[in-house]
Image (cartoon, rainbow, N blue to C red):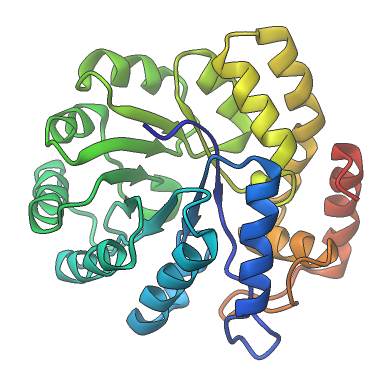
Length: 291
């Protein structure tokens, strides 16, 4: 089971847009040292939408290599094409990833039955633990709790990243899903309460910037120490919000570069963080004690 603070890792890039392997190695070490429970490579925060299949597979392979067994690597392998998702998930298995993270098919707007059959096909095609990922604000597609519950009974479908921020869904998911099914928040702003109410962890954008503090918050929340967890989260809350002042991962890539951990690169159609937003992110970083 994946628990605690799981970083949705940025993909460090040079200013020409090429992947910066040196910075990637540095970031993996940074998260190992910060106590991050697992690393998601090539997810939404990793700009997976702008990676071609070769780059995508190479990025997963490099992240697994740099982690060297010190921390599990979860590979983002979702697509709106079932065939492409199967190919990417095969890449993740061959690279030695601990699991795959599969976003709902974006743009296509499938039915709930279509979603069920899409994820079932991937699970049956590739024998690797698979985590579903529901983020309707980005995909225009909502994996309902009842459909997630159907999928939870497939042996290698092991969890769900629920990024709606709707805490009422957690109650429904807990009541419907198979025993031991991993329930992870994908919304930093509500993750503390999600864990306090029985979730298992958070796949986090904020953890890119404050891994140790996120790990502490998640660990305390998992132990049920509400007041202590809320106090830590209060330090993180400005980051949770400011890292979405422009479309993610624009602000978090700027923040990681500001910390000297990455080059200043991002791929079109995303652009570098606007100057008038930088002070907001910098203030939040100061409040969290990371600069």
